[in-house]
Length: 510
Ligand code: NAD
Image (tube, rainbow, N blue to C red; front, top):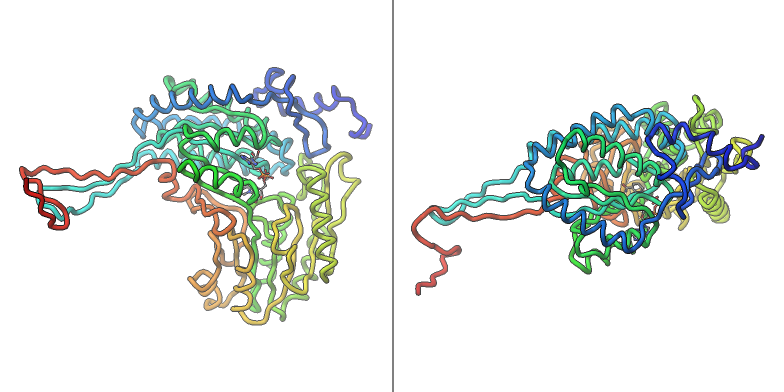
């Protein structure tokens, strides 16, 4: 029976094993007003309960109470909770990875990879829990010492996007917990089940830990309005928001208006420069993974190739061939490399962008809807579009597998083109010329938060600061000093003398 005419009961039972293996029962997945559809075939898989405005008031109050208790727990002890979370995630890896595939449409390997990234940040945060260092500073005054101390900040409101439904939460939460903060998480309304599953995993770790405050971590469900309740509350000390630049533009002025702290991780428009000496075998592999992996729905997905004129035709020819071999279909099936877009609206936006590119002189390879992959899902053939220049549509982030290819003659021209977009997340160069490589990562090179050599723009590792400049929002997560964003810094001057000298030689004798 084609899935488009399946009854709801049949559909639910088809996926119920993945859902129930994550500990989600009828109370979690039925009777609510937010309908959750799997991108695999568009089937309704849950109706979850939205958090009401009254509940938001209670949630924020409870989080602040939990924070007041948690901040008194020594950081290495807080690290023990995160260590236990890492253990629980190891045990849950396969089940949670499958739920990521079901809810976000990622292929099995990428769903598992996302959970592995959660485990990695837990390990990283456990180490950090013993390294929340402040400086001691030389004082100009005799018998004085200066130092800086890092204190827990308060309640962290985490707003996340559909495409990394669990990893982004863990980047924030593992660090926030060791830093002594309480967390309220508002996941994307498109992926609430993975959030509810993570809450259950954390609760297991909390039960083993023993006496963590109950409201240390809460999940709130809903769309922009629920996010806005966090964004506008003076009792949410930090907003860490991941999503589109459009969302960031709405959120940033509201948080700034109340002098809240803000970490923004927004859209990208990531490019690869392919130089005349590049290893094209490597470049082709890097381009295919980063442009069509996750069906082009990573913030770091490759969207632009800026190829040297001497190798452009060969590169495009090889890419067209490589694209033709990529299996498109059900992300749960072994062998699939390109799963679905998140929904039909995303497919419409992709078709619209390709039409605009063609109208402004682009030559399109692929890009058409694939209707026979799995009925009800928004499957597409990834597109390569050779462009005469960097037109308006190329300068926008279309969250789909469209790769625009442009050419250049001199490296300066390529770098200028790479930087000439509003976003500044990730970038890379493929070259075997050390001068080109060093120029690209120098102050004269890429203006992005991430700039790689001979490796694609996507697939970040824990430990490197992640984030970007310009319309990407300026935030950094999961890097060596990312923890500072979740704490408040205090400068202490200690006088152990019997005098009271003033700084800068000021006299005030009374
Ligand atoms: P989105 O902007 O539609 O939604 C992201 C989150 O913001 C959701 O939880 C949504 O409910 C919430 N939201 C939207 N408007 C809001 C408002 N006014 N106030 C408070 N909350 C609001 O993004 P999406 O479609 O879920 O995700 C795709 C986008 O996210 C892409 O642009 C992608 O590049 C970006 N992204 C960036 C990163 C990064 O680290 N830079 C990571 C993942 C995704």
